[in-house]
Image (cartoon, rainbow, N blue to C red):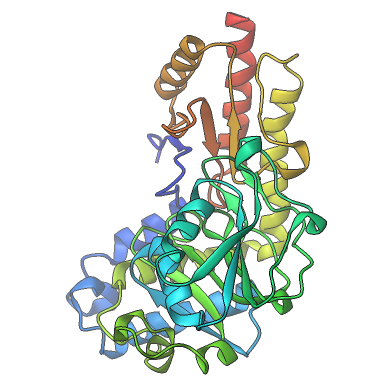
Length: 361
C-alpha cells in the first residue's frame, strides 16, 4: 500500500501493516468457516484456539513465570484502577502509589474509594518531569503493595530503573507494555490496556501471581474478581473477541521479529533519533523531561511558541505524519513511537523536524 500515513497517536496505536492485511483477508470468512471470527460463538473450537494461543504467546514473549495467570479483561487499564484495591487490599493494609503523572493520579483517585492508600512519592510539585530514586520512596507500615506507572503517556516519562522496595509491586505498563523485559520477582500484578502496543482498544492484559488470586477479597461482584476470571480462563462472559484475536496476531509478529530483546533495541534507537534532533537544535526544540527518565514510547517536545507548534503540527499532518499534537492538558507536541512504528516513520519525522527548524528558526 502506498497511501499509509505515519500515525504517531498515543492510543489507539499504529499496528503492523502485515497484521492488518492478514486480518483483512480473514475478516469475512475465517479459515473457510463461511463467517467472520467475530460472529462465532466464543465457546467454539475456532475461537478457543485463538484465545489459548494469545494467552500462551503473551506468557512466552513477556517471560512470565508459571506462577502467574494471564487474564484478558474488558474495561481497559482504567477498570484496573478500581479492581486492584477491591481485590487485594484488606482491612489494616495500605496501598502505596508513585505519583508520576496523570495516569498514576487516576489510579490513586480510584483506589481511594476502596482502600487506605497514600503517595509514597509524588512528582506533582516538579511538574511530573522525572521518576523517583528508590531512596526517595517512603513506605508506611502495613503497606501491601507499591503501585507504579512504568511510562506516563501524557508526560513522556519512563521508569528507567525499577524501585528497590520491600513490598511487592503492581504496575500499570499500558504505554510501554512488552517493549522491554521486566524483573518478575518484584511484581504481584502487571497490567495494561491493549491499545498502545498490543492491538485495538477493548481489553486489558493482566498478569497476576497465583498466590494473590488465592487471597483476594470475595465480597465484590463476580466480574470484578480476578479469581473468577482465572478459573474461567478469561471466558467467564463473552470476551472482547476481536481485540484478543488481533493481540494474538501482534504477539506472533513480535515473536517473529525476535522478541523483547530486539524490540527493546529498536525502541531505544527510534527514541534516540528524535531526542538527538531535540538536543542538537540549540534549544529551539525542548523536552521538559529529565534526560534519564525520557520515554522510549512517547517523545514530548515544545517549540519556541504555540503558534509555531500549531504550524508544525499542521504541516506535519499534510506531509503524512499524523496525531503529533500533545495532550490537551499539557500542550506542545508528542510523537508516540510504539513497537509497530517503523524506523522509517521516525526518520521521516526527524528529517521533517530538522527542515522545519531551518525554515522557521
